[in-house]
Length: 322
Image (cartoon, rainbow, N blue to C red):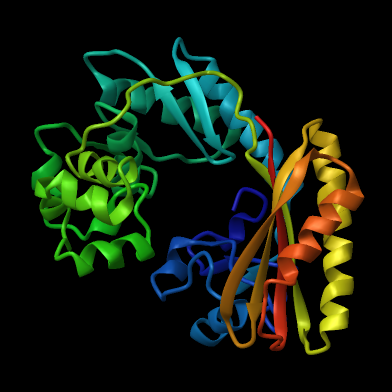
């Protein structure tokens, strides 16, 4: 919108190379497009069917990286601790009697320095602040506290919580736990039996709205490096799938080497036609950044796929040492 002001107020979709007739998914979309069910992860072709008059734009990662750096630098200009969560998110650690005032100052300074709008969530811990940001969108401010937690979130489904996805929510529902309030009141022994002695009780505590308030300025360290590609035509010959996997493995190995760390495990993602995704992983014999070792682990993971159906997407992720 900054680069093309004439697009303000229009449904705009960003994804792939900007051609909605090709395979790919939506990276992001304007709120005008989201109102029609076009959001991140939706196939571009589906987006085009729902909104044939939308403006489709290509992904421009270099421009986003520059904008991200400018926003984070602006946050660090305050007398606060800044913990970068991703290229478009960060926690700001501050102890103030008027957090809304600080939030407005942050918004104003980000706008003045970058021209970008931001939403600010306020909480007594990082979990609350993260969820509050969602309620503050677009470009607003919202606050969640221990006192308002259950009034706001108690009757929400469990996957409304940060850290609970669809699979976990489905498993919780099988236990009769469908809301945040029910999860918060659940017996920890029951949760431990279903999810393990660490994860189970953690899920219960998560539903109470409690969590860490520690914000660290330690630079973010990537946990892994990944590459993936969507094929415009399904790959039906698995010899070609293997060849493409080798290409991706070489690129991931280059990324691992540039990071200056070693890979410990490689996971291969395959999206079969029409749109079913499966993953398998293989552990390296020992941590390594050797391209041959990374490729070997990727091929070992690929061998675990017993179904050789047509492939529309292939991806590799290398988990790295600390």
